[in-house]
Length: 446
Image (cartoon, rainbow, N blue to C red; front, side, top):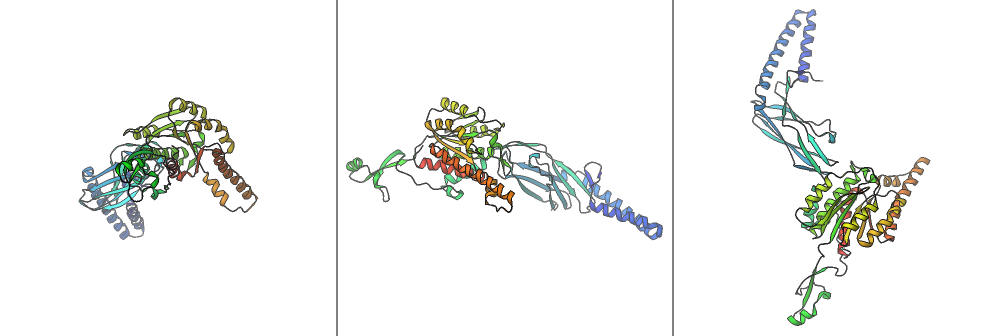
């Protein structure tokens, strides 16, 4: 425990060692005058050094040392976000520094500390990263810097800056990563599969001259007869298809996985899917619901759409309510008139739970292309692969295998009614979702 003197100054461990030595010499003075004299000399020297160090550290400390924290305008949920601190030493001597930044309470970092030495007249930038797991506002407090002179008897606390608030949005950094991969045709680097196109389920683009490697089935014989050279039809992907991400905010989406809820995983994946869909010339929309429809962003493709989607996703929270598929179906029937790709993020823990929603899901699938995306229980998967050593272990493993089997039966049941589905682990959600979208688009289903 450190003892504070005056304002923002603390004795160091070296001071206590020196004080202990002085006290010991004075105590030994009763056995000999020489020890007492050494004790008095040491005490006087200690007091002199303290006065010197206080003069060194307390004369215009704010002018002699400067610190500044820089944070990004907004943080990306589930990603590493950089925080920079710049330090400048204008003291006429080198100093030892201990940086204690008041990090937002959501990170629960009680032992944050950065120690370093800084020479006179030098500057240094230090960087650390924070990974938020919740959306919302995060507040940074004061930046505290403890400075110690070469004498190392007293350290001076300097406080810089003021409270800074940063908003944590859905994973826009992940979205940018996928965007850059899509622009440079490198989506396979992050696990996106190349899908072979089936037939010519695409829009006509133009007629051009035949080049080596073109499909003979695309030859336009009328244009060939007129130009007296082989001409082919060129096609392009169908554009302006509507892709609507539907996020279930019911109680089942509150389940945690590696610090984040399933709802946050679904929000991050829907943001990336919306961006990829717009890069593919489609329109992106959003619906969130639980007992009723909470948010509805009509499908659009313009420069402001992604910001509208991101702002809509920023404050979405589960309210521990049961989801109402009837309310969802009614809203879509009234507001979505064009056949669209509906990507529903939800979670089923049993076959009966899925069967209860089947009537409404069938109605949605009759009017639109419906894809149900739900989650594997990765903890159950670990139980099914572990070795049972006693009767209790056998019982637990049997129950886990039953629940895992139910998840697979849900996929088969949905397929039986013509509903596409994706069963995925939370960490693979974004990649699996994009793969399904690209597969359906390549096969001309949308």
